[in-house]
Amino acid sequence: MAIVLGVPGVDGLGEAVGVLREWQHDGAPMQLHPGDLGWFWRFGAEATAAAVRTWSRDGRILAVGLLDQPDLLRLTMAPDVQRDEELAQQLVEDVTEPGRGVLLEGKVNVEAPMCALIQDLLFENGWNADEPWTPLRRDLAEPVRDPGVRIEVIGPGRAHVRAAVQRASFDGSTFADESWHAMAAGSPYADARCLVAYDDQGNAVAAVTVWSAGPGRPGLLEPMGVHREHRGHGYGRAITVAAAAALKELGSSSAIVCTPSSNAGAVATYKSAGFQPLSEVRDKYRDA
Image 1 (cartoon, rainbow, N blue to C red):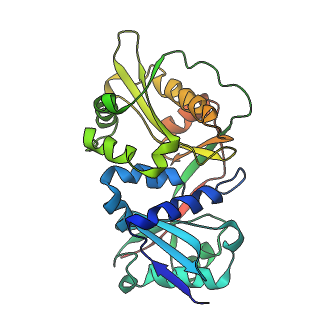
Image 2 (tube, rainbow, N blue to C red; image 1 turned 30 degrees about the vertical axis):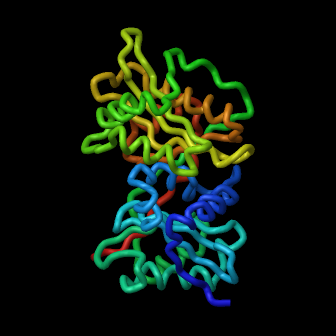
């Protein structure tokens, strides 16, 4: 059977999220997580559907991609087809030819599991390795200690607090109350939590969103940020510990996160919260 490239539409997002859940397991390479689609859902269901691509054979989804940006495809595939030659060749053709409706002309990036055959084929086709990222993982078999600060689980009535910390943590962020409500309406958020940390004066100082992929599977931190006026006081470590505790409560087997290797402060923060760095990963990029 031929491999079919598709755009799922809003009605098909649930199936894409479902297979991403199934593909998560401890020991898997860092890869696209249902929480990545959940975080993108802040732009709305229609925008999320328009950014998703699926590759199917005989009615089975083999690969899912998210156009996190028009020039960045984040891609993963079912564990048993990561070295499938037919799929890898099809993926390379689809991401290389702008007319296929995946990536634009010019400089573009593809993120894929480092062990997948597509990595080899892209390299053979003249794509290069981009800057390294560091995945980190914390096992959740053992109890998680108290983070040492007050933590609030954010509901609809407190969305403005979560949004304000997000904007104060990331330059250029446009995350607003409406963004939170759109995100929370998405199916991945049924197994997610937004947390905000407070200092002794009652100031909201850090925030994180955590995404479960279901009991016994790795959960994702995306994103975590510390208010720019409250950095250097350990609040990043505290909210990260709280995130691990929340994922453990949701039944996750481990907590995972990924950050640019050049962001030494972020790597140090996650390590201080009990996360262990894994082998670096790199996107493949094609020059303009």
